[in-house]
Length: 149
Image (cartoon, rainbow, N blue to C red; front, side):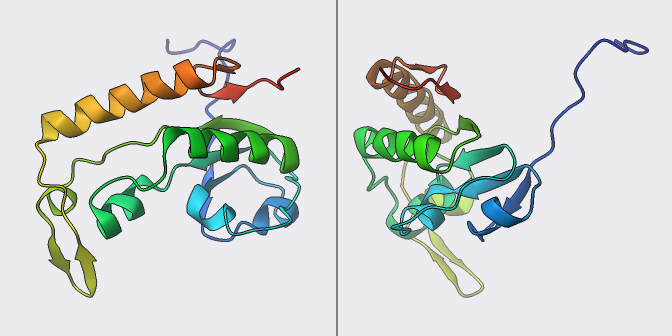
């Protein structure tokens, strides 16, 4: 509501392909799982951050998810515990852009294509969110994973 001074201001996150910035920048960041998963020793976050599942790149390259929900959850928990300050993790979404669905080439970038409909992409995104919640009940709404006992 206009003039409401009691509401919390929005938190803007800076998307980056440099996971090392988590330890150095001190700003809220948005970092993709594919960039973090290669790290043996993860950086400690200097500020709150959120995790992107990397879905666009996954579907662009393979036309499907090659990472299972269980594998993704294991990594989310690792990032929560080792990087710290994780605000939330995105589900393994299925983007609906025509290039993702139909495949082809955009400049030098090749899209595998899923061959599925927009409706099917939406259904799979919602299903994945439900799977992640079922598999990780300690992750409230798969946004804020509570430490497991």
